[in-house]
Image (cartoon, rainbow, N blue to C red; front, side, top):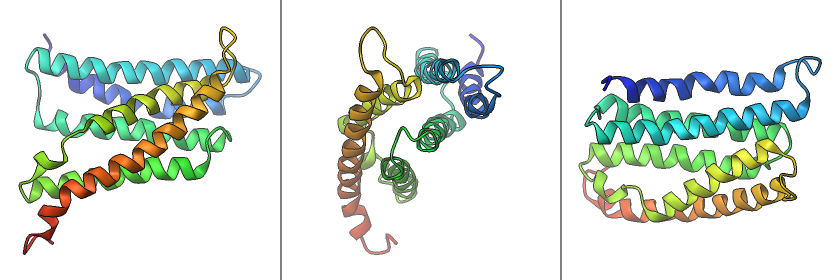
Length: 191
C-alpha cells in the first residue's frame, strides 16, 4: 500500500473545491444549469466518498499520521463551507443556516485545539449527535446541489428539510461539546 495515499486523497478533496465552485461559472453555452447541478453533485459526492476511503485506508493499513489527522477534518470543513456558501449564492440555502453550520465548525475546531492544548481532548471527542448531524448535512448538500426531481421525489424539498435538521443538530452538538469542555475551562489557569 502506498503510504501517502490517504493524505493524497485528502489533498484531492481540497483541490476539488475550486473545480466544484468553478462549474457554476462556466458559460451556459458550454453546459446548461441542470448539467452544472449534476456535475457539482457528482463532484461533491465523490469528495465525500474519498473522505470515507482515506479514513478507511489510513486505519486499515495503519497509515495514520499526525498531519493526516490534522488535514482530514480541515478538508471536510472546507468543502462543506464552500458548498454551503455556493448554495446560499444559488438561493437554495438561507444564509442563517450556512452561518450556523460554518460557525459551529469553526467554534468546535477551535475548542478541540484548545482542549488538546490543556490535555483534555478526550472530553470533546466526536459524539453520536455530531455523527448524525454530519450524515444529515452530507445527505442534504448533494440534494440541494442537484436541485431537481429524481424518480418522482422532490429532492430539493427533502434536502431543505435535512439541512434544517442538520442546523438544529449543529446547535445541539455545539452546546453538548461546550458543556463537555466546561470543567476544563473552569480550572484555574485554563484561560
